[in-house]
Image 1 (cartoon, rainbow, N blue to C red):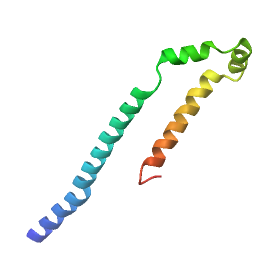
Image 2 (cartoon, rainbow, N blue to C red; image 1 turned 180 degrees about the vertical axis):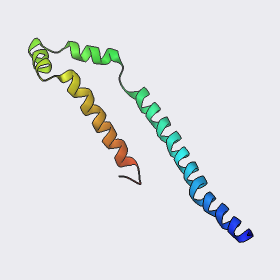
Image 3 (cartoon, one colour; image 1 turned 180 degrees about the horizontal axis):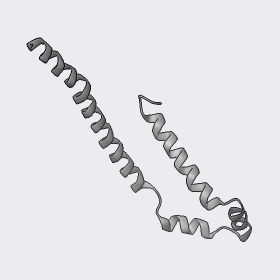
Length: 91
């Protein structure tokens, strides 16, 4: 009975506890890195000044191609692709 209990505890420690600690550390690391990267991005004032320089023809083309829906989707897809490629188990 002791050997069975010992092997069951060893199995739980190897599979559950180690993976829980590993994924907790990975989550904390990724959340800290993402928070740091978001703080380094330019603010809304920089974006507003950049978009203020657009001509009316550029705004017409942007509205015609639904740029306001397309651009955030593409940026988030590129960020997600970058993040997934940096994960050692999936990339």
